[in-house]
Length: 340
Image 1: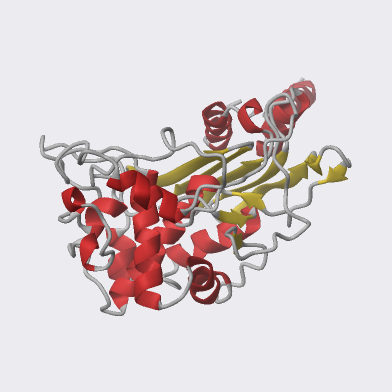
Image 2: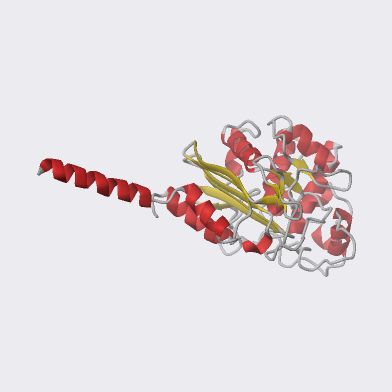
C-alpha cells in the first residue's frame, strides 16, 4: 500500500511539475500567437531563466534574429542619459539643482529656471515634442529646441507635478555634449559602452552608418516601420538584452556610479501636493523595483529590475504594437513568483 501511495505521489509530482509554466514557455506562447518577434533575457536572483531569440530581424529576407542583434531601445535610452549626467556630477562639472539654461543658452525665456533635477525626473513642465512635432524630414535636437521656443510657456510650474517629457531628455543630452566636449554618441561609447564591454550597443545619429546586423522594424501587420529619428538623449540607442543586463549589473555593483548616486538615482521627488512623483533619475520606481519601457516606430521594449533580488525581465521586439508589453510583463512576473 505504501509503495502504491509513493508511486501515485510521484506521478502527481510529475504532472504538477510539467504543468508549471517556465519563463521561456511564456515567451513561446506570445511568439506562437504572433504577439512577439524579438529577443528576451530573464534572470531570477542572478540565475538565467530564459535567454532566447525568436523570429526575424529582416522579414523580407527571412534573416533570423540572434541574441546579438541590436534593437532600438527607444526610451530605455533615458537611463543612459541620466547616468551620463550623473557621471558629470561626480566630476563636479554640474549640480543637479543648477539651471539647465546655465549650460544651454538658447532655451526659451520661460524655461530659464528649469533645473537639471527637474529634467531628470520629468517635473520640468517642458512640453513633450513627440506627439506634436511632425515634419517631412528626420527630426533632430535642433528641431526640438525650435519647437520649445514656439511654445507659450511651461505646461505647469517646474517641480509641481509629473509629466513625461522627451523634450527634457533631449536638453539633458545637449548638456552632456556641452560639458564633455563630445557628441552624445562619443560620450556614451567612451564612458559607458566601451568600459562595460557593451559590444552590441551604439547611438543612432546623423553621423553613424548603422550596422547591417541591426533589427529592422515593422508594424503589427508586418509592414516596414523602421526607426527614422535623429534626436539624441531621449531615445536614440540600439542595444541587446545581454548588453542591457551588463548595464544593470554595473549599476548594482557601482561600476559606473558611486554609492551616493546609485541611491539618488531611485529617489522620487516630492511634488507640490505633497505626494511622491513616480520617476527618479531615468527610471520609473515603485518600491524595490525600477523599470522602463520604450516604443518608437516598430520597436517596443521593456526592462524591469528587482533591485533587491538581482532579478530582471528584458524584452526587445521589432514588430510594433503586436507586442502587448504590460501583458507580457505581468505574465512573466507571475511565473517568477511561482504561479502558472
